[in-house]
Image 1: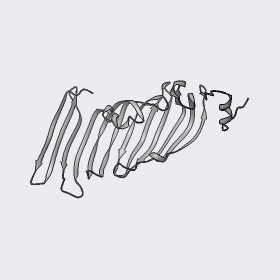
Image 2: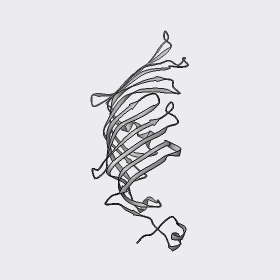
Image 3: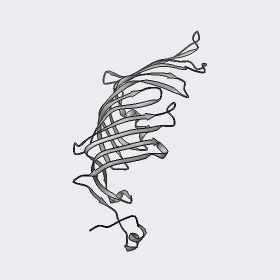
Image 4: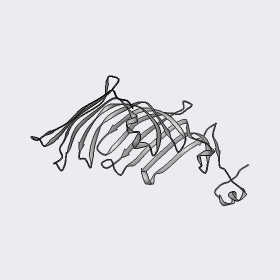
Length: 231
Protein backbone atom coordinates (compact mmCIF):
# COMPACT_ATOMS: atom_id res chain seq x y z
CA UNK A 1 0.00 0.00 0.00
CA UNK A 2 1.38 3.43 -0.91
CA UNK A 3 0.36 6.39 1.22
CA UNK A 4 1.06 9.91 0.04
CA UNK A 5 1.43 11.41 3.51
CA UNK A 6 1.69 10.13 7.08
CA UNK A 7 1.73 12.99 9.55
CA UNK A 8 1.34 13.41 13.28
CA UNK A 9 3.10 12.41 16.44
CA UNK A 10 2.90 12.15 20.21
CA UNK A 11 3.38 14.69 22.99
CA UNK A 12 3.78 14.06 26.72
CA UNK A 13 1.58 16.26 28.92
CA UNK A 14 3.07 16.33 32.45
CA UNK A 15 0.10 18.30 33.81
CA UNK A 16 -2.26 15.45 32.84
CA UNK A 17 0.31 12.65 32.92
CA UNK A 18 -0.87 11.69 29.46
CA UNK A 19 0.62 10.95 26.08
CA UNK A 20 -1.36 12.89 23.48
CA UNK A 21 -1.61 11.13 20.12
CA UNK A 22 -2.47 12.57 16.72
CA UNK A 23 -1.91 10.86 13.37
CA UNK A 24 -3.30 11.35 9.87
CA UNK A 25 -2.76 8.92 7.01
CA UNK A 26 -3.55 10.25 3.55
CA UNK A 27 -3.85 8.56 0.19
CA UNK A 28 -4.27 10.52 -3.04
CA UNK A 29 -5.02 13.69 -1.11
CA UNK A 30 -7.69 12.12 1.11
CA UNK A 31 -7.28 11.59 4.87
CA UNK A 32 -8.21 7.91 5.01
CA UNK A 33 -7.38 7.33 8.69
CA UNK A 34 -7.33 9.87 11.51
CA UNK A 35 -6.42 8.93 15.07
CA UNK A 36 -6.35 11.36 17.97
CA UNK A 37 -6.72 11.29 21.72
CA UNK A 38 -4.68 10.45 24.77
CA UNK A 39 -3.06 7.56 26.61
CA UNK A 40 -2.82 7.69 30.43
CA UNK A 41 -0.17 5.08 31.32
CA UNK A 42 -0.28 5.62 35.09
CA UNK A 43 -3.97 4.87 35.40
CA UNK A 44 -5.14 1.41 36.40
CA UNK A 45 -8.37 1.88 34.42
CA UNK A 46 -9.55 4.14 31.60
CA UNK A 47 -6.07 4.43 30.14
CA UNK A 48 -7.30 5.12 26.62
CA UNK A 49 -9.34 8.06 25.39
CA UNK A 50 -9.07 8.07 21.60
CA UNK A 51 -11.10 8.44 18.44
CA UNK A 52 -10.39 6.75 15.11
CA UNK A 53 -12.07 7.88 11.91
CA UNK A 54 -11.96 6.05 8.59
CA UNK A 55 -12.67 7.40 5.12
CA UNK A 56 -12.09 4.86 2.38
CA UNK A 57 -9.42 3.18 4.51
CA UNK A 58 -7.90 0.19 2.76
CA UNK A 59 -8.75 -3.24 4.21
CA UNK A 60 -5.31 -4.47 3.21
CA UNK A 61 -4.08 -2.86 6.42
CA UNK A 62 -5.58 -5.74 8.43
CA UNK A 63 -4.54 -8.48 6.00
CA UNK A 64 -1.60 -9.65 8.18
CA UNK A 65 -4.00 -10.42 11.03
CA UNK A 66 -6.25 -12.56 8.82
CA UNK A 67 -3.69 -14.36 6.68
CA UNK A 68 -4.13 -17.67 8.55
CA UNK A 69 -7.63 -17.98 7.05
CA UNK A 70 -7.97 -15.69 4.05
CA UNK A 71 -5.91 -14.03 1.33
CA UNK A 72 -6.34 -11.37 -1.36
CA UNK A 73 -8.14 -9.11 1.09
CA UNK A 74 -9.28 -5.88 -0.53
CA UNK A 75 -11.91 -3.20 0.00
CA UNK A 76 -12.55 0.03 1.84
CA UNK A 77 -13.91 1.02 5.26
CA UNK A 78 -15.76 4.16 6.35
CA UNK A 79 -16.81 4.93 9.89
CA UNK A 80 -15.66 5.99 13.34
CA UNK A 81 -14.66 4.21 16.54
CA UNK A 82 -14.12 5.45 20.09
CA UNK A 83 -11.34 3.62 21.93
CA UNK A 84 -11.42 3.42 25.71
CA UNK A 85 -10.53 0.95 28.42
CA UNK A 86 -6.96 -0.22 28.96
CA UNK A 87 -4.12 -1.47 26.81
CA UNK A 88 -4.77 -4.99 28.07
CA UNK A 89 -8.55 -4.76 27.63
CA UNK A 90 -9.56 -2.05 25.16
CA UNK A 91 -13.18 -1.02 24.74
CA UNK A 92 -14.08 -0.12 21.16
CA UNK A 93 -17.49 1.34 20.33
CA UNK A 94 -18.73 2.60 16.99
CA UNK A 95 -19.80 1.57 13.53
CA UNK A 96 -18.35 1.11 10.07
CA UNK A 97 -19.35 0.15 6.56
CA UNK A 98 -17.37 -1.95 4.11
CA UNK A 99 -17.50 -1.39 0.35
CA UNK A 100 -15.91 -3.10 -2.66
CA UNK A 101 -14.71 -5.91 -0.41
CA UNK A 102 -12.97 -8.98 -1.81
CA UNK A 103 -11.41 -12.00 -0.11
CA UNK A 104 -10.31 -15.55 -0.86
CA UNK A 105 -11.02 -18.31 1.65
CA UNK A 106 -8.06 -20.53 0.81
CA UNK A 107 -9.22 -23.78 2.43
CA UNK A 108 -12.41 -23.88 0.34
CA UNK A 109 -10.85 -22.26 -2.74
CA UNK A 110 -13.57 -19.63 -3.02
CA UNK A 111 -13.34 -15.90 -3.64
CA UNK A 112 -16.17 -13.64 -2.50
CA UNK A 113 -17.07 -10.02 -2.94
CA UNK A 114 -18.67 -8.43 0.12
CA UNK A 115 -20.27 -5.23 1.37
CA UNK A 116 -22.09 -4.40 4.55
CA UNK A 117 -22.20 -2.81 7.99
CA UNK A 118 -20.52 -3.58 11.31
CA UNK A 119 -21.11 -2.17 14.78
CA UNK A 120 -18.84 -2.46 17.81
CA UNK A 121 -19.65 -2.42 21.49
CA UNK A 122 -17.63 -3.39 24.54
CA UNK A 123 -18.36 -7.10 24.19
CA UNK A 124 -19.28 -7.84 20.57
CA UNK A 125 -18.60 -7.07 16.94
CA UNK A 126 -22.03 -7.16 15.34
CA UNK A 127 -22.55 -7.98 11.69
CA UNK A 128 -25.75 -6.13 10.92
CA UNK A 129 -25.69 -7.50 7.41
CA UNK A 130 -22.85 -8.53 5.15
CA UNK A 131 -23.86 -9.31 1.57
CA UNK A 132 -21.60 -11.83 -0.17
CA UNK A 133 -21.27 -12.47 -3.92
CA UNK A 134 -19.61 -15.52 -5.49
CA UNK A 135 -17.91 -15.83 -8.88
CA UNK A 136 -21.23 -16.39 -10.67
CA UNK A 137 -22.88 -13.40 -8.99
CA UNK A 138 -24.91 -15.64 -6.64
CA UNK A 139 -25.81 -13.91 -3.37
CA UNK A 140 -25.71 -14.81 0.31
CA UNK A 141 -26.28 -12.76 3.47
CA UNK A 142 -24.27 -13.12 6.66
CA UNK A 143 -25.60 -11.84 9.99
CA UNK A 144 -24.61 -12.41 13.60
CA UNK A 145 -21.95 -11.40 16.07
CA UNK A 146 -18.47 -12.12 17.32
CA UNK A 147 -18.29 -11.98 21.10
CA UNK A 148 -15.06 -11.27 22.94
CA UNK A 149 -13.49 -10.24 26.22
CA UNK A 150 -11.08 -7.42 25.53
CA UNK A 151 -10.56 -8.83 22.03
CA UNK A 152 -9.61 -12.19 23.48
CA UNK A 153 -11.56 -15.46 23.86
CA UNK A 154 -13.63 -14.89 20.72
CA UNK A 155 -17.00 -16.67 20.40
CA UNK A 156 -18.90 -16.81 17.11
CA UNK A 157 -22.64 -16.73 16.47
CA UNK A 158 -23.20 -16.36 12.72
CA UNK A 159 -25.87 -17.33 10.22
CA UNK A 160 -25.56 -17.35 6.44
CA UNK A 161 -28.64 -17.64 4.20
CA UNK A 162 -28.71 -18.09 0.45
CA UNK A 163 -30.87 -19.22 -2.45
CA UNK A 164 -27.80 -20.57 -4.26
CA UNK A 165 -24.13 -20.05 -3.47
CA UNK A 166 -20.67 -21.47 -4.16
CA UNK A 167 -19.24 -23.10 -1.03
CA UNK A 168 -16.37 -25.16 -2.47
CA UNK A 169 -14.10 -24.77 -5.48
CA UNK A 170 -11.00 -26.99 -5.18
CA UNK A 171 -9.13 -29.45 -7.37
CA UNK A 172 -7.14 -32.66 -6.90
CA UNK A 173 -3.92 -30.75 -6.22
CA UNK A 174 -5.36 -29.38 -2.96
CA UNK A 175 -4.40 -32.66 -1.26
CA UNK A 176 -7.65 -32.97 0.70
CA UNK A 177 -9.81 -36.09 1.15
CA UNK A 178 -12.29 -34.60 -1.30
CA UNK A 179 -12.38 -31.86 -3.90
CA UNK A 180 -14.64 -30.35 -6.50
CA UNK A 181 -17.36 -27.75 -6.81
CA UNK A 182 -20.25 -27.40 -4.36
CA UNK A 183 -23.24 -25.10 -4.83
CA UNK A 184 -26.01 -25.15 -2.26
CA UNK A 185 -29.04 -23.27 -0.97
CA UNK A 186 -30.31 -22.92 2.58
CA UNK A 187 -28.88 -21.80 5.92
CA UNK A 188 -25.47 -22.37 7.51
CA UNK A 189 -24.74 -21.47 11.14
CA UNK A 190 -21.37 -21.16 12.85
CA UNK A 191 -21.30 -20.96 16.66
CA UNK A 192 -18.80 -21.38 19.46
CA UNK A 193 -15.16 -20.43 20.12
CA UNK A 194 -12.57 -20.55 17.36
CA UNK A 195 -11.01 -23.75 18.73
CA UNK A 196 -14.33 -25.59 19.04
CA UNK A 197 -16.61 -24.36 16.25
CA UNK A 198 -20.00 -25.96 15.71
CA UNK A 199 -21.17 -25.73 12.10
CA UNK A 200 -24.79 -26.49 11.34
CA UNK A 201 -26.28 -26.70 7.87
CA UNK A 202 -29.83 -26.99 6.58
CA UNK A 203 -28.98 -26.93 2.90
CA UNK A 204 -29.52 -28.80 -0.34
CA UNK A 205 -27.13 -29.18 -3.25
CA UNK A 206 -27.82 -27.25 -6.43
CA UNK A 207 -27.13 -27.83 -10.11
CA UNK A 208 -23.41 -27.71 -10.85
CA UNK A 209 -22.27 -29.56 -7.74
CA UNK A 210 -19.52 -32.12 -8.42
CA UNK A 211 -17.65 -33.66 -5.49
CA UNK A 212 -14.83 -36.17 -5.97
CA UNK A 213 -13.36 -38.55 -3.37
CA UNK A 214 -10.08 -39.96 -4.73
CA UNK A 215 -9.47 -43.66 -4.03
CA UNK A 216 -5.94 -44.91 -4.55
CA UNK A 217 -6.83 -48.59 -4.77
CA UNK A 218 -9.55 -51.14 -3.93
CA UNK A 219 -8.27 -51.44 -0.38
CA UNK A 220 -8.99 -47.76 0.20
CA UNK A 221 -12.71 -48.45 -0.20
CA UNK A 222 -12.66 -51.03 2.61
CA UNK A 223 -10.91 -48.63 4.94
CA UNK A 224 -13.43 -45.85 4.32
CA UNK A 225 -16.52 -47.64 5.63
CA UNK A 226 -18.37 -44.31 6.04
CA UNK A 227 -18.67 -44.03 2.24
CA UNK A 228 -21.80 -45.49 0.66
CA UNK A 229 -22.13 -46.06 -3.08
CA UNK A 230 -25.66 -45.81 -4.48
CA UNK A 231 -26.63 -46.71 -8.03
